[in-house]
Image 1 (cartoon, rainbow, N blue to C red):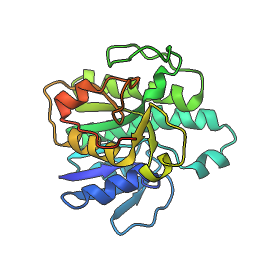
Image 2: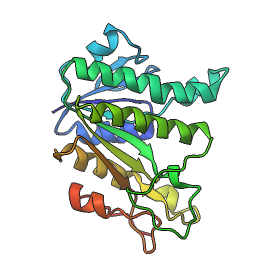
Image 3: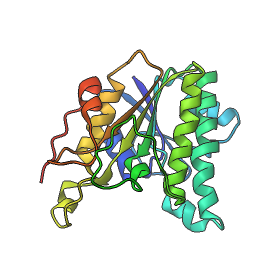
Length: 234
């Protein structure tokens, strides 16, 4: 499978590329230059032929959708930059994908869309998000909306993975326990599962976190439909 992974400079994209490159052809992209032995195309994800060329020949897009810290640091309006990236750039990427007949995409969202809910509640995919006005959270909600509309119009199949708080096992050993943790290897496994599953529905949402007793988020849907099997424990 030919897979395009966005936000190549991010830790998640790097781990995904390293794992998936063993069985798939990987093309990486980001707003900034990234040193890699894999194919890399720098792209602003604009509404132009360059974005169409970026997705040509691709079978699936993994839209990690994480802005490089340097881009935010250099922005005079970082909140607007964050929202613009998750909405306009996601729209441009998916529009190019539709025009180039890319059949599938996976969008990386966040379980922090539910931070305002009571911590005692156990949240499933049918719950309505209540995003805060924090740009990093609100922009992911708007990014989900953008993806959903492409899927509902029948253009392509899109899976939305709402990720827990990413952490490595090494880092977790030195930090107070957080019931929203998603260990990096479990995160990569979730994307592998999503890539290996071609469901009938064009729009699906899955909650993804490592599994702990009394976890805040149910991951039953991901376990049943994607065969997601998290391994990390504390």
